[in-house]
Length: 121
Image (cartoon, rainbow, N blue to C red):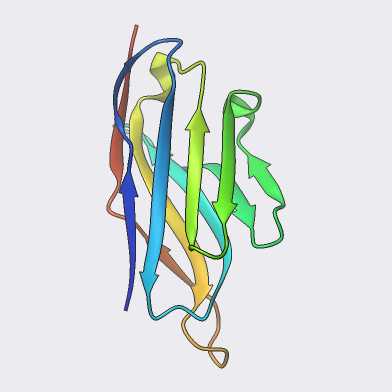
């Protein structure tokens, strides 16, 4: 089995910063994409940022220029540096990994348990 464990959420004032981390462990052959999603109350889960094993990144328009995603392929970890936080960034943030457990199986998607980020005005 695979586990994704997130850390780093919390309460911060508007304009502040937080850093989220996620570590993937277990039976992992390779990880294609790692990313962060968020879900605010009453809203659908949305992509925040993603990064491929080659380092290509993709960001939601709402976080471009404020958030930076990074990855350590050797450690199977992904981080999200969040700067200039706004109250509308308040949500539960979920780590996601698209990975293979063996070289003979297709990629599967795995999720962390989520970490709360609250930005006060």
